[in-house]
Image: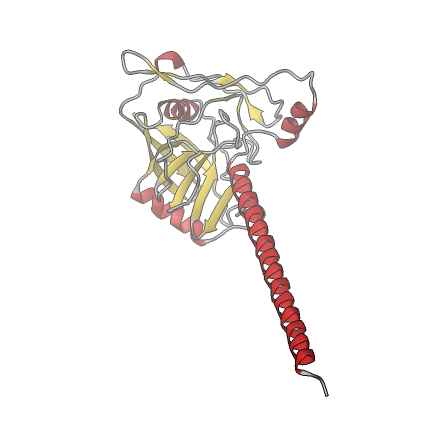
Length: 283
């Protein structure tokens, strides 16, 4: 029979093994938790990047890659932020887009950018194949974007173009338009700086300008928000859609999209095709 001393030694060994097993289980739990947290972080960052890229489209990704890989490529022109003049007007910079994107369409540039009005509103009527969508541009909130939008409308830049993307997510509902080529990669041959603040938000009825995800890459593409949307404050809010226009957007949204942009950046071409027949600045 084992002695009391042998029993104590055996008990101590069993206790030691239990403690070691418990420590190993704790280490495994911590390791598994770290893996889960890391995966979630990657997914969230990837989703944010995809969202930014998806709302852009004014730059050709292949052209950007070619530019960044060649040390002899010419430097991109920079679209400087707007500055306010003594008389209350704003000086805007509409820089040439020298990316080499073949989907860009020549449209000149807005006149007298050094003295851009920064007060008042500009009513615009967006007549589409699905109905009329009245818009109001806000010069005070985004003078450079409002001036560009109105100028392009007057140049008939948007006329005959399709709205290439619609998204129907719970916290992200938009119709994206403004690309004269309908590819999602087009825009004018100029670009300008974003007009945003950390407080910029995108509630239902917002008109905001898309960009490629890089600073100073706003062009002609815009999105009409029909669902309160959770987006980073990276996209210039240029105005609002009125209630009659929102009713048209709701009808387009109800038909959904073809999912051709899934899984990233999301959405797809509207199931009900939307063509901008005319975009008219209302006198």
